[in-house]
Figure 1 (spheres, rainbow, N blue to C red):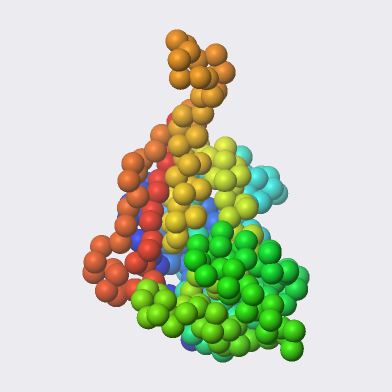
Figure 2 (tube, rainbow, N blue to C red):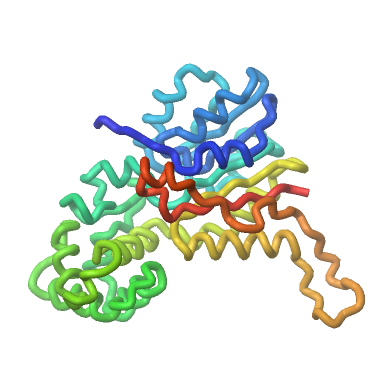
Length: 310
């Protein structure tokens, strides 16, 4: 398929990554290769980039985009397995890493993957097509209580219970098999007046199901800790998030790494012996400039947070 990719917060993230020409860097969400391309441009022949993605299409696309660079290693895996990946490649430490979280542009644009509520396709939403659990199983097999919990927690959808009720009712007649069938049910569940304001009525529910399919939030905190553990001193971790749930996890993970002390506040000295492992570089998240939002509307909700290894 033809594919046009625009990396979000590209200049800002590359600047904050503070690239050393002979360093080793990880792009844990290779996607369209936009961030990786800019990293490669700044590396010498002694430098190295490790590009990780669980989506085979992303790997193949990036290989073509980065074909002029010989110092790139591609790994089809999830960045949550960073410790194992580095061990298998005999890489002890890295000098920086970037994660661009959430669904990528080409996954949204490749209609048959079922990520988009704007294109009709089989219910899927798997970032890694080797996995069994898909949106179809969630929509057709999860009970009403579990559906409500997912749509509420991961979609922050006020009509979660009603949407779950409508889904369960509809599937009594037949399986819900396509994205447009699910969109139609969601629209019926949300009162007309509530549908008149805000984003597309299916946006939050689709987000919630996608997160559940790919276990996106479950892996984040430990992945941050694991990446920081493998950073060289002054190495940086740059993370771009696209919704409040991700951002909250990253913000709190960075805070704990910067101030891990668990002693009561009234203790005169620290006795827990837990030492900071990072300093937070971005006290407030970096957000896109208006001109980037004008060019790429998907960047509107993006936030970049950066931590540096002590």
